[in-house]
Amino acid sequence: MVSKRPEVLLLVGMSGAGRSASANVFEDLGYYVIENLPTNLIQSVVESNDVAETNKQLVLTVDAKESSSQSELTKSLDRLSQSGVLTRVIFLDADNDTLIERYEENRRPHPMAKDSLEQSVKNERELLKPIRELADLVIDTSDMNVHDLRKRIIEGFQGTASSQDLKISVTSFGFKNGSPRDADLVLDVRFLPNPHWRDELRDSTGQAPMVRNYVLSFEDAQTFLDKTKDMIDFLLPRFTSEGKSYVGIAIGCTGGKHRSVVMTEEIGKWLKSDGKDAVIIHRDMKES
Image (cartoon, rainbow, N blue to C red; front, side, top):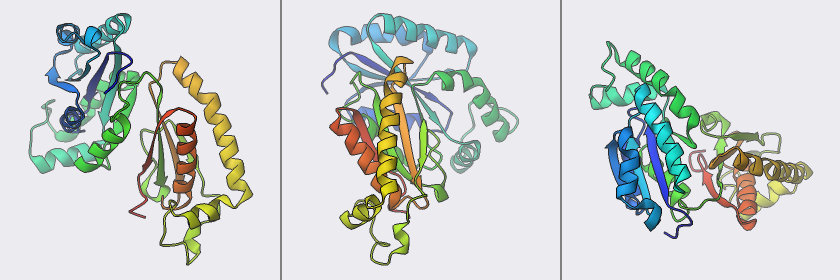
């Protein structure tokens, strides 16, 4: 990986949301990974690995449930930023029901060790709320298996993780499956005519030229693209100025197979052609 600045990724989040699985993926991508690091050792580990001098890419998984740990984490972020090390916080999350189900399936004790598994998850969520709010990126794994999580991380970080540029994901989805939980901007294109009702288009996806041509043939589609591009041009520098490192744009239709795929391709390719660090993700295209 070619780096513009040394970089440290801090993986935090809910127990059972996929921190360890994510760390394994980052290790496969060539990052140097240290798991279960106490927050008070972050600074010394970064210094001992000569991150600032060698432009190394380092991933640290940390537990920050205690208030003292959260205070140490915040101090470490400030100190690393002042030393020129690009540091990002990635929060792994999932809804309570999913986390409970995962622990029940694996029959592992929850680290909070409360009277009930449900109460343990609720307590941990409350304790981690301040850390989630300061995260640069939240990855919700509720609807992901380990393969989906791997794909999400690779699409977002392979070959570009060390860039200082704002990283943008453009995701197509179907509202029938719920909107992406980690999106910063959700757009609805169900107002466009649905290719599903055309026999010759129903079984194809928005990546097929005939579906793309059909969707883009409507004046409203072109107007949507023009106005969306204007809005994104307006928002991106403002996201950057407030310190955001990642932005998620989600475009939805009914099933996530036709209209949203076409629009996601158009917006994603436009961003890439403009030199933006963007990835295109089609969450529901195959499942629709």
